[in-house]
View 1 (cartoon, one colour):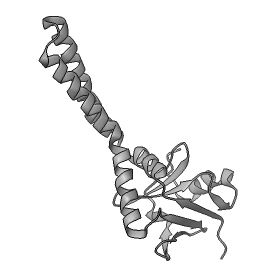
View 2 (cartoon, rainbow, N blue to C red):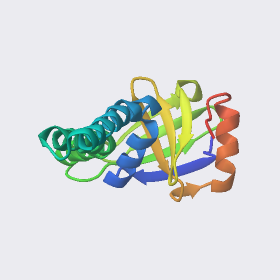
View 3 (tube, helix red, strand yellow):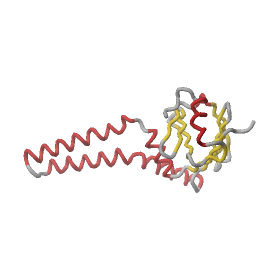
Length: 171
């Protein structure tokens, strides 16, 4: 049986960061943003009420730290994965995904392994600006660069995913 689509993507730090940003739960941004906003409001209140002082300055510093921590988290996750891959393989990981009518074959070039994945094993399909993301159980995902198709019509890929993963495509 011949594959319908093939995509070879390298897990670069940029791709991993985009993956982490896209798959992060929306509420996770609020856990850092709301306390930061409250700290800024308290600092402004302190400045208006008491003038410049240590309290408002510390609150503004805490707000900045919360924002940096919250919005920098995906980059840190990507860096950790990229370093782990580099330690293990000495390079970035390259994966080829071959899409058949009944399954996806995942080929890891560094490990020289292949694994079959039924479409029922994909819990959600998302997209970002540059990637398609196949979300799997256990906080795992497969990523495909939209420009890295080596077989099949990339314009027809989204419709193919909708047929193969009904109700799980979020775009």
